[in-house]
Image (cartoon, rainbow, N blue to C red; front, side, top):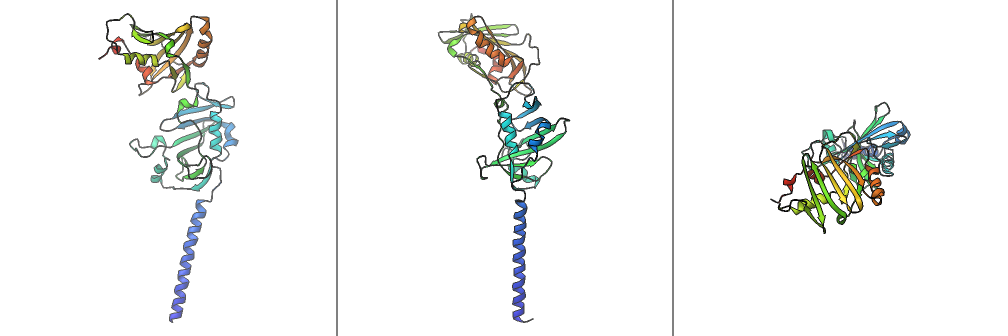
Length: 337
């Protein structure tokens, strides 16, 4: 073969290789963006009326929304904040595919796309996905999705978020992001009442056969009828702090008869009384479920009492650890060590 023919075939071969390379790149890019603009949860708005239940699980969230009178509510019946579930559904329906990402199972954890039931608790680098499962009226699963890391590089106000369908390894970068409260209590108006520290007159704790009373005189707390005991003032403050701003962390329908269970009775100026009664400890937790009741001894406090009872009647609330601890105290817990 002549030198010219050799150079010709060599150049032709190089050209074919280059064209094949760019063709591969083009096809690859085309595949990555082939679904760009497609709604991730197709037909969600059309199917919403046939959905009966939505479950949401993650590291710090485990809750259920059920359909009732054409809206979603908590199983307890306690009202959500206005607009919260509507914003949640709307943000889901607006999620659109920006591009395909990895479909390699081992890499999904890097995008926080592993559901909580399959997540390694020892993994302190990544987080589990937020898993959202939609159920039809017949309890059949409509769709189950996993939402992971936020990616602010995607254009738009909400940025982007990684996601996949639970039964598929293919992940996507979506345009838009889920809008919902991060903790269960944030779905509700979780502040039940507030009181002024100076208005507190006394607190009585009834725990089995133990009864002790803390009184407030000239803004100084002391243990009533026990002048010789060396009392820990910090512990007395813990008792008073319970009612200054009472938030709950979860709510459920009233289930238990708490007769003879520990309870605190707070007495305030002008005749308002608030009783907080222990129900039971939350599973594997120091937090306690409690019941709350407001009472009044003067007409002036009737409206305030009715306002609190309207929020709490028929429900049990998960209180913070401080409230839960105090309900278990006896006089010995107040003595300075």
